[in-house]
Amino acid sequence: MSDRALRGLLILIGAFVLCFVVFLTQGPPRAEGAPEVDSVIFATIAAGTYSLTSLAAILFARGVLGLFVDFSRPVAFFQVLGSITDPLIALCEPLTPGFIEPPLKPFLAAFWFYFLKVLCFGMGAVPPPWLFLLLALG
Image 1 (cartoon, rainbow, N blue to C red):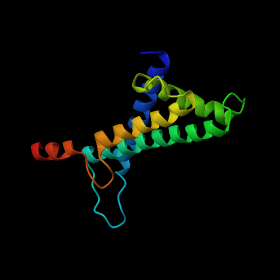
Image 2 (spheres, rainbow, N blue to C red):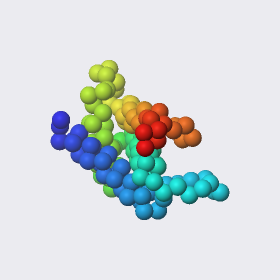
Image 3 (cartoon, rainbow, N blue to C red):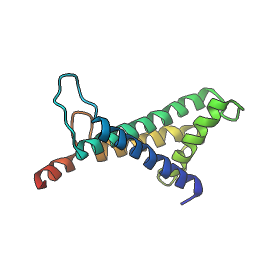
């Protein structure tokens, strides 16, 4: 694993841990009028959902900006966005086919992060399949 991919893994873990701590202390987000649920399981699902979705959105924004703006410009915003997204793109590099052009790699990385979110944490109101097994055993 390259140094950039390792930094991408640390960004991914850091985003999850930050969301997990927030949702464990404040409770996971819920609809207005919904009953309050304080549980480690639901904090884990909310943290995974929010962290992976936000990273996918940042990668998608990087891809859209990369189509219109040159990222080699010495603007602080582009440098910060590049320092966050380049390791995440490098983390998805083993899954990226060779024929994908470099400006399109952020879009594919965003797809992989969103796919991982759906696979591990479900889609919004539809919980992940492993949650039913965990609740049945617990």
